[in-house]
Image (cartoon, rainbow, N blue to C red):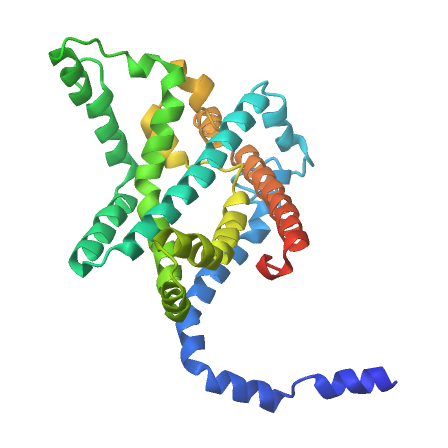
Length: 317
């Protein structure tokens, strides 16, 4: 009984909750658009995942269509392509996460060391710009660079007496191409995130280190990088949850339906899209999406538990 009384005493009253909400009304109003976005586009559509377990009929709707259990999930497992798709999807995402984060931290530290404000702001804008370029335009740019007949790089190589390989017929060349394009598009965005974390750190630590005689590399190693560690861990945990999901727009626009390149460029999203493009089987594609989300959820739980075991302060929950 005494424990129940103690818990009830610690429980905040409605008046206290109302007072806290009123004191933080500005922050709550700023958060309302984000809360509404996630509620409308993430939580409200959740009942629609039931479509993965039915044989969807347009006239009957989702909840009145015949229930087929896990039959829709067998599509991907019986395709004979699952291992190839998983290998490509996971390896590409690991490359994007590891190489991308290393370069983003590197450029963020470089920007922090720049003392010219005009150059710093110009560099940020130029690095951030590719993030907003459509994948369609990116694929057009890559095609005009690498095309064997009239590509810019092909013409340069031939003008110097060399011979340009046929990139669009060479599957082994495309992992490098896709990774470079993804890094070009995403490095600027991640750099801004890490740069914001650096600029928000306590400058007194850097000043104290400078007084103690620390050079630039020592300040980066012992102050800046440990300060960025929580941000790096959080971004890693968020990214690892989507390790089975690929950037469909980037992959499909770069490769299209070129079957010669599928051995190294085909990921789960592109394979499902091609398979469902003629049949319009929403149930099977939804089943694949649900499979990716569930696996990603457990990967996040496992990664978070591992981080929590190493250092509880850096875990998400």
